[in-house]
Length: 237
Length: 233
Image 1 (cartoon, rainbow over the protein chains, first blue to last red):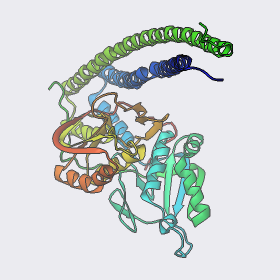
Image 2: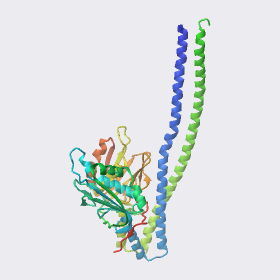
Image 3: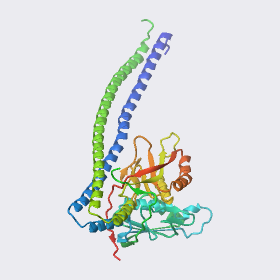
Image 4: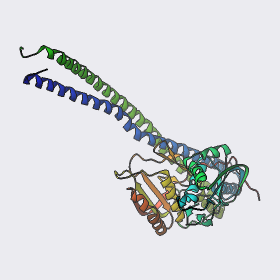
């Protein structure tokens, strides 16, 4: 097909216009679908957050109201205070408790390192213990201890080389973690990535990862620490 | 129009049809886009309303909480509870977390929104930082105003929402993460800047540590003991 100059330029112009429109169309289409979602994404988390906080605060308010009602009823002040003290001790983990729960045993590999593999895969690291704690609390654990050390608000699990420092004491493997709570929930909560990774290490490097469901677990009491810096906020200031 | 060849008629017609089709499609999409914008704006304003409602409720509840705590303190004083017993109770409540506290400490601000950040802050990072602060002897710790207590779990919900004490801590604006720790300032700064800060900075996060007098709110969750029974000596 032979075309003269004028025809060719006309056809070219039409093609350029066509291409241009097509691109604009594609752009608008993509823009339309992406735009609607982005702005809402920022609002949703903060909404959930305030809602959750509201719920927590109203629960706490209810607790204080009940306590106030007890005072209003004229219950003996000292018995009330003692009762509260007991409750606080229980919550803070200063009371030894017993109940159904799970027991997890972690131990270093007994296999001799041939020098080919990564030596760190033969050992139990602080991180595994922390991950398991996290999973257990998330699964609704009521009390947790490791090697007889109660896990409280200030419990650290820190690697100090050949040992792991827990509650300021040196702990060596095997690490026996005990937790009281609904045993089904606790076992289910352990199905997380870190737990399966430990399973792989058990097969490959020979470490120990054992889970037992027990009808009675004894968890010792924790200790109250001294506070030198933190002071209760005085109300009304 | 003697210059036009017959053979050209067909392609030119085709081009013209396609052009017309595209122009009409374009107009249609434009209409759709404005409709979508309308819907999204509607949703946005509704969302804002709901958010505003829950925020006003939040303020009211916090106010209630404060006045109730005051009343409780007054009631305790009035009935003449043994001050020593009260003191002991306060100490225990700091440990269990239901008592708001203040004191000297450090505030760590972490920003993971830079362009050169490889991975945003993960739950493992948060758990590790909290552990390091505990190791450094921190007495009371919070992250984004969520008090860290014994039962605190740091978990990921969905792809990017981090839950602490079952509450999302992600912030839409401002500094994404603020860790507060009350304790010996020198020790806390020393431990954190040596053990945690270098690793975070290596991955491009912005970390700043400030010595401050802090006020850390109480733990608002509840402790429940359904299975655990106290051991009677």
